[in-house]
Length: 213
Image (cartoon, rainbow, N blue to C red; front, side, top):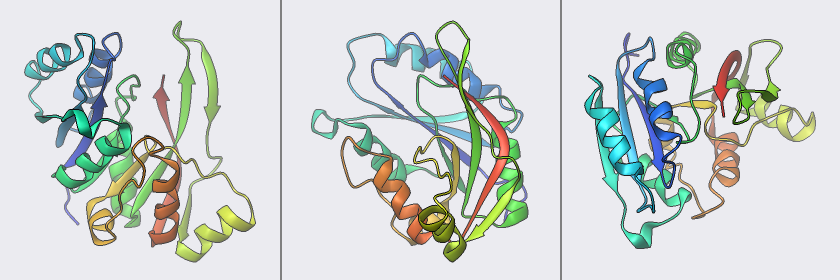
């Protein structure tokens, strides 16, 4: 495994003018710098695209913007375009109205490499528009699972497994070797996460707390 692997942070953008600059800046301000930003843009009714361009042009990070066709509308299709086009050794999905703490990528990469994990799932915290905390989930301890243990944990013990895509770092070889894709244009995370549970050889849950709105 690479010592300094490239991470693609993928951000689908659609009508998020009030939030997208903060979202992108939270990636630019990561303490881990081997990052490419991949934007998928659905034609919007606001100024989202220009804000994306202006923000990215101020950064030294590499980036790519894919403008989707009208028939490609939907977050599930955005995810699949990302899965077909990302160049990093790892992939992180970030919703364009969310943001992450500055240490998020570096800590998740460290855990992925040191544990040779296909997926690293982090704890997460949500805030409302006035920065008041409204929800928090944090794993009490760091745990690793092989495929059979993960299935037992989820399906027998009824352990918590977030169906969200945005709290996980994915190894590219795992996604590509198993042809993991979103199966629905709109309901993009639940089925995707089911495929992850079915295929992942090693997954790690960790206490890293992401800051999400």
